Image (cartoon, rainbow, N blue to C red; front, side, top):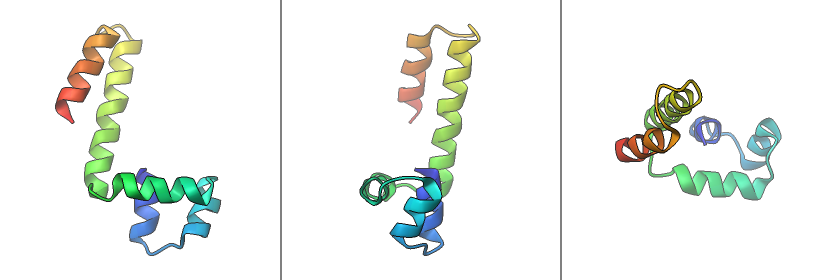
Length: 75
């Protein structure tokens, strides 16, 4: 979503985004629909939270269920 949002904000055409991201144009369209209501900065922040929750669960800092619950509550 972050890549699609970034490229669309740069006025990149759907077929080129599909080629760059190695995605079908239909997937690019759906990704755009999913990220329309978020700014690029918000998407990056959400991605960082997902990464941190994954890291916390995999390193044993948190139980996976707790990490997921906290992640969902923070989004």
